[in-house]
Image (tube, rainbow, N blue to C red; front, side, top):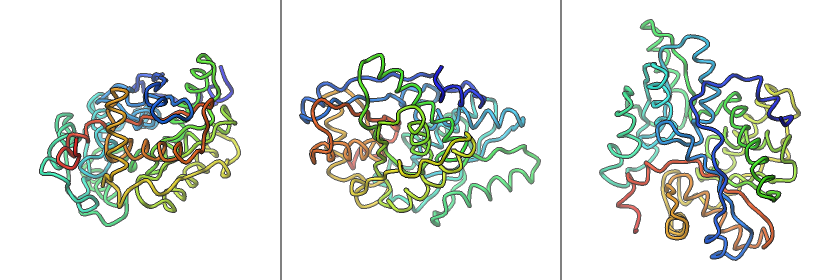
Length: 336
């Protein structure tokens, strides 16, 4: 067992996620771009509720909810939030009630299906209670208010922060690095970089923290998908620092990198590079990406390869964080 794996073993898991997830080569996309060998870490295949990166964080975070005998989970996000969908699925699996604050006003619906299909449909399927709230820029205020109201009625509430981005969630997500390190060793390569879509900060915090211990030569590159790179970096730094304290290791601030310029005009709004990335992934590799997160993340990777950041002979890992259901809510906005 690696040093990182031993550190993470101190934190209980709830057993919700199917781990490890595969690491696969993208040979045709690599040949098309003519740069480094691209691998994909399939955290879209974590299992429950159609999977995704948030489930890996929930696997650790909700062990705390189970320990405190919570009977209700409360969280929040936009109508097509992958995080909400995975919280709702986890609540169903654990036999808990689920209440979600659904933010309206952050994303202009790209189609009539936006409010009802994709993740929104799955939230209802998993039995979540949906509460419409206006978006005011604060990611967690409405969630906290909802949690307080339900708690006042006698429920034993566990609040899951926006994006499951908490220090404990970041510690849980560091397990991705344990898996990549071992899978890359077996495949015979050393990753030069691990790239992913970065928004609420918890996923990148976990990757940065884990790589600082177990993959010290790999650069963690977060692709800003919110069109707010300074805020994203600040949240990654804050979460990484707190998670490092939990784990009892130094804060690896110098390893935090958030790349701007690939988010399009705003969160939840796909642009030409996003659509190109989604089409290439589908046509060359049979992969399904979404227009909010993974499409923008891969667009960033493609742009950096075309700029020559990595050369042929190097290896880079793209983290597939899931989000496939949202693709259907954007059908009319995607010329496919």
